[in-house]
Image (tube, rainbow, N blue to C red; front, side, top):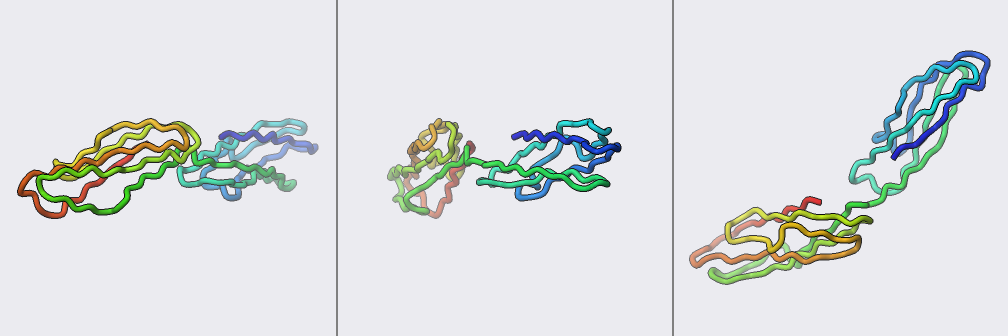
Length: 169
């Protein structure tokens, strides 16, 4: 997001301003300028570029300030970071048992908890007898899809076999 602030020198002398950001969004807000020199009556637009990280959801307040030899002026701003690309991935259980030479289909639910439509690429890693029935799923906000993890160990297969399901959205 981009915020615009106009800095105006209303004094009678040339002023050098040092610009800064404070508040909850400080760590992910960058200014177009960090210092500005203005003649009397001159003004300049300064931009604050707010680029929140993925996990910085919610309302974040911040203050843009300009300091000079004559004092400090500031403007308050607020950004509401929405969970546009949030999702949930669930399975009924964390571990399953299967006999050799049998087949097991495990439903895995993928829900788009974000506010925009998104496509998710699913893949699995583990033994050769484990696979997913789908690789790419597109979901509208609030929509859920079920992928099946298919297991079919051959005769004579024994042991514990971890399977990881990876999701990229």
